[in-house]
Amino acid sequence: SSIAERYKKTFNLEPIVVMNAPEIEPSLRRKVLDPERIRLIHHGIASELRKPELMIKTIAMCEKRYTLHFMFMPSDYQHYLKDLAEEIAPGRVSFNDPVKPEEIVKNISKYDVGFSLIAPTNYNYLVSLPNKFFEYISAGLAVCTGPSPSMVEIVEKYNLGCVFPSFDPSDISQMLNNIDADKWISMQQAAREASKFLNSDNEMEKVLNLFTKLL
Image 1 (cartoon, rainbow, N blue to C red):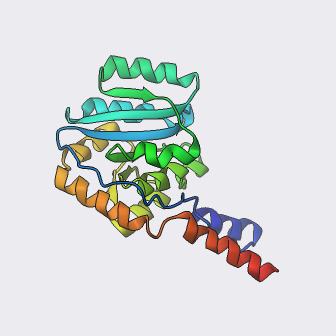
Image 2: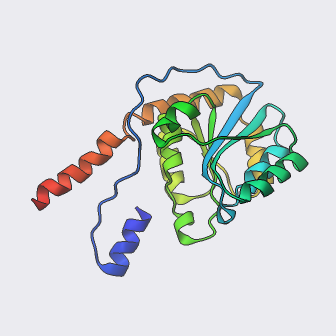
Image 3: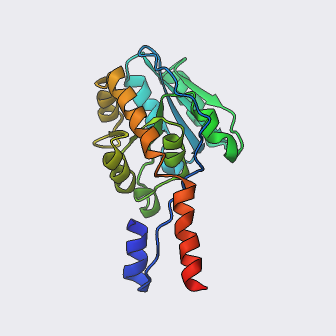
């Protein structure tokens, strides 16, 4: 909605907002959360602008029950991230091969928490509402994000995750360390409920309605 408002202000257009949510995954089974082994997943592009190293620095300060798992598209920046992980969080950060887009939700459903942290280094990243955010919800994961307004709005509306007060790893780790297993389970349940509304069937209906009016 933030981008839609900017189009309206700058170009005097009246755009509709279609969120890039995936299809519903009815075959996913509810998993059991191990309170001693909570796995955070982040997938997408390993971009220096997005500062994924903040997540590595966070996990280094977290309790040992937390591990971090990346699923990145190949890039040179991964070498730096792997070296950093080995230096400050040895054995607690893994780098997994990417999968096809249509396999993402099923693949990430084995994890517990979607780590949707994107540093606001430009306007698009500030107001971003990325694919991964909706894929985490569709997979039934609790979703954690920084103070990114578009993601915060949905997280708080459905109570499906946590919002960090800043992008500082010390603030993020402190918040994660204070969340117990029952809270994670509650957020996962909320994500599963939210996926009934945040999916491609509902979002693409907006596009179909628009074309119907135009025709």
